[in-house]
Image (cartoon, rainbow, N blue to C red; front, side):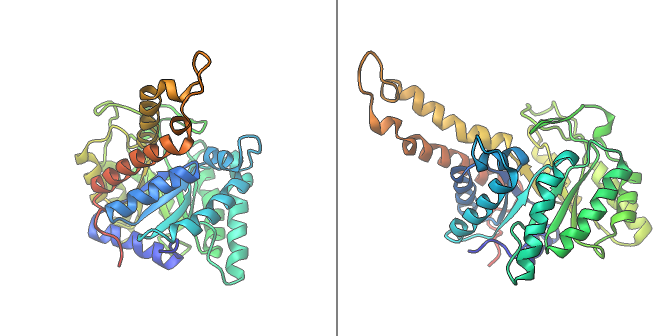
Length: 340
């Protein structure tokens, strides 16, 4: 199926919210990890979201080029061709973008999409994230308001973050403290500035104890009720139940109960990166360890071309990551829920 149109993406998110599931949003950094994500969604019979971060976009442009826009455009165009061979709907998204990278990442990509739309084409990406967690709320929302207008013109969806996600991702560091928990007042201010859909479609990553990175269950102190309190506060003021479409960041180590509770309160998208990175790399390590004499030319020998051919361990890596995507879709209850 083709990459999701703006209308299909909107319908995907609407279905998730109304039917009580969320989409895995899988970070990728290469054509192979993209295929792993697509394969996983297809095997799970789940539509889904594939996303790239600023670092992923740089990497996709070439390790010596390091141009986020070049990498993003190349990725999106490649994804459009290959995704058509998979029987699921896929939306393309750009992940965390801090203030100092907006001019080199999100803003030019929105402009490209606006130009495409003017020509009668689909936008390049279906959504973009502005990560304002490192600035004060008022500045965060001021920038979000500007980007929301640009996003609406480009027929894309904006994702924002209100609060701070702990840990580190692509150089963005959040301390683990009380700022990890967004307040109802923050949610009300967000609704006041950005509206509830009339100014453009946006998703909101409110923070409820989320931490980026790899952690054992129990380390991360999640409070999903933060999401409920935010929805309730907005409903009380504006008369609109579950007004926000929430995004779940930093979910490693979360329990199924916490994930499902968050979905009940309006989460429609959950980012998965750390776990799929490991699922991709682990089979490569296994291949190297089991074929040590083949992948290395030891003591003057010639090695084994079949062992060091990148396709040998690449196929295993793809299968490993795809299996973790299937697991993610099952956890979020999107498995078996693809649109017809």
